[in-house]
Each structure stands twice: as structure tokens, then as C-alpha cells.
Image: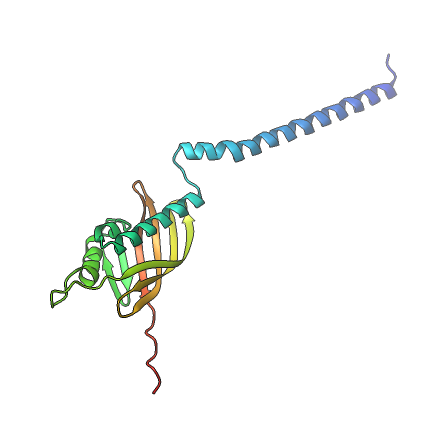
Length: 190
């Protein structure tokens, strides 16, 4: 019959080996889990068409770049392609709210693309967006803040805007536009 001390020592050795094996197994499981998260999940997300915040920001900036390019070539419909084509679209400027894609397009048409009372085409100017800050709210919504600069023949109009973007099957679109013109400069001192 084995000696009780030997049996206790054997049991301790067995427990130590089991503990080491358990620690190694836990470490291996952890490394496997991290690998899945870091390598496999992004690949699956790309395969399913899910995007990353950086990709979303790039797409949103692409919409804004396309709007600037369309405006500067006189393409109102190209400019309006950045807006959600829905009656729930809202455009706010000053104390006025324009609702709907058609009404927003009509506002731009009248102010920048239609002839004035003398038959002369309204001055559209050259548009640029500056100081853009894109903040993703959730996977399908973002807020963009920035400054617009509209260079006209006689002056440069500028102001701030806040845009709400939503992601639709056709891509990111502006669902709400709040634009404020900068205060006019003070009159020159006499």
C-alpha cells in the first residue's frame, strides 16, 4: 500500500500539471478569440457589406465633394443628388424651413439657377466646403458640421452648416440641412 505522503505528493503533482494545462488552454482560447475578432470579423463585415466608420466618413465626404463639383459646373440635379429624395427632407436657413426634396430644389433653382426679373441668370458663384467635421452617431447616421464659402463676383458669402446624414441602400444622403449665413461685416467707420 502506498505511503500517504507519496500519495499526497502525487496528487499535488497531478494538480500542478492540470493547472498548467488549464492555463495553457485558457491562453490558447483567448488568442483564438482575439484572432477571430481582429481578423475574421472585419472580413465577414466586408463580405456582408457592413462598413467601418472610416469608410462611412469617406463616403460622406464623397457626397459633399460631388455636390461641390456639381454646383461649380451648374448642375443643380447633380447637387441635389446628395439630398434624401423624400418629403421629410428639411432645409433650414434663417428663420425659414423648407420641407421636401422638390421644395428644396425649387428654392435653390429660384435663388441661384433661375433668371432674375431682367432675364439675367442669377449668379451661382463658386462653392467650397471647409472645416468639415464628420461625427458618426450610429452605423447608419452621422452629423457633419462645416463652413461653406460661396465666391461671387462682388463678394464672398460664407456661413456655417450642420447636416444630418443617413445611410440608405443607395448610399449616404442628407436628411436635414441647417445653414446659417455669417453676419455681414460692420460698415466702415467714417
